[in-house]
Length: 576
Image: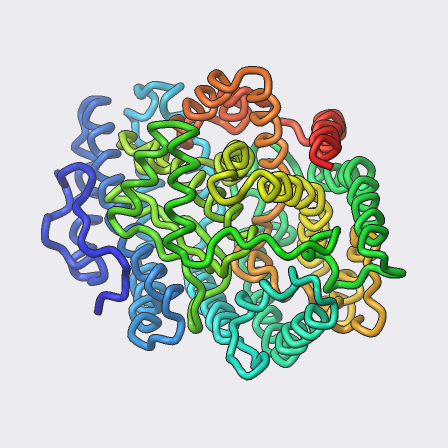
């Protein structure tokens, strides 16, 4: 079975420890390598021996990570393919449960090794800190619970990817329906919006059932690890050493105080320009002057070639990286039935190459997404020469700086997709989107804080909490008659299901990206150089140092937020 757009790609560096011919989905071939690492650690006599041991362990981790990624990519590209689903679930259900206790053992061995103190403290400080946190949280009884969690997450993706509607005689995916929300014909927009909203509501019971099971699993995982609640567990597991839950709650407050008034101003202006009494959910994506929608491309290959033109103008090294991805077929970008929703970048850890997954349908949001995911890809390419597997990926808070910065810097050359007037519209849409996403980030993150600090809550209580947050952060949109759809709007946010507490990172990172963008307005060459240098650090330094290397301050208080919101307002005024 080969459902992947790319074929066999060799390891970035020749294997030294893992056999050249090995089935990384066969436990009987993996286990002896773990045995060898366990016994060999005791034979390390010098610090250099322990470093070689770490690199061999890294090589094995990368091979296993790539096997997992390939199966995940195949499954998400073809959620309706039984073989792809079986192969993915085989790894989740048969390899990962056996691998986790063995990895825990190796982590213990490393932390307790008498030569660890001889290693460079600066080089290994982050590795030591992260490994210590994982060892402290590991519980063998959580392994089957985590396996079940992954299985339920796959069910969510399969359900989401299967949803279609009949629209004017044609079957359409929900992603394809997004185009119609940009049409000046308000009756058409409403028809399209209602179809999608009602289709999701038909599956509301299934989404709720999946989530109920996920919550129970996560609460048990946290209890097993000795944590008061899953939020505390998730913060430690996500290695949030440099900020706290209280910082996140203050961030929500800062967004409410500094960003929400601007978001509401923009919505009021939109309503006035559209000459409407009330702004409805189907009025949010259409051009506020009722001009025909931006259509940046008709076919995906046009999107790729125009994105390449942007990177050609931005930076030669980044341009070469994107061209390599396209040449090696490391892009699956078109929307189709049976494809999981959303977009992501996945790194093939042994090949040390990035893969981009998207659901492009020919709207401006697709342009932003390809720039965003390309930023992640450039991050992966920047760390190709880092041999320590753990350092080839950074904390999510900085990974998203890589991607969001690329949206802002790439938009400087958006004429690759549009004439001058269209480029101005696209830039304005993007900046308005940044203003709008902050309240949504606060809503999603605050919802997760509520969910996991209210164990045993009912669905009714959960819905009330969501509606309360929508009231707090939702702006000037009239949902009259569609209260049920509004109450279940969170079902579409896959992070809540698949990656609990992975969402505030977008807000933290957006502040970093806006700072890089602000720096670029003063000195483009230096800002881009700092950005690329910071990407090259991977995960080898703590978050504040990664931000500092990129020319940013790691802070998400109102003090940082306020001047950046002012900058966005200023740029929006210039684009009027």
